[in-house]
Image 1: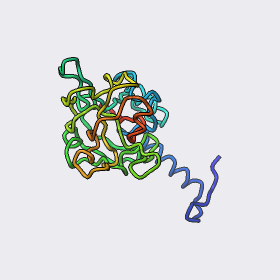
Image 2: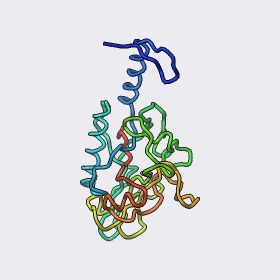
Image 3: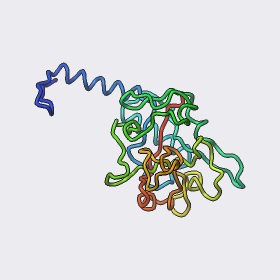
Image 4: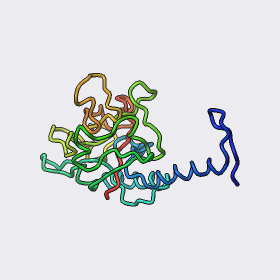
Length: 222
């Protein structure tokens, strides 16, 4: 049964319009092809590898009403000895990608990794269509796990940059991006959505300490 209601502005909204608004929201969420996870897996940067991270993206998307089943986490990996691992940019399809509000965040892979992409605090929304808490909010959760360089490829910085290819929740480190493009220092890296700095560690507590919650970017591999 539908009910009329009074909006926050004190305007009477007939039930038919309120229902139409909800339908539009659900339609946008069903058509979204990009989001930031609203929650991590709860075990720091141990996501169960790429397979576990992809499953997390798919589970959250399904719960939000998405009909897509080919979600991929934007994560890179490395191989022993510095050999080439998996590039995040190669996992996510060709684009374009839009958030839960229907806003296009990037038209293509090259657009996504250029200065012209549309990823920022207002557009890098969760699967629920909500903004992720950034610098200045409590708690700050703008560190998004990527393990990637600015071009979306596996990092050659040396050392652990992927928390053991997303299987460690203790010692180690992972490269993160800032979804709100903000940092303590006004530098290019601190304004990078996908490659700002390394985490203090891989545990949930260590990720929280530097402004993270184990969140990842999810894209439909279209």
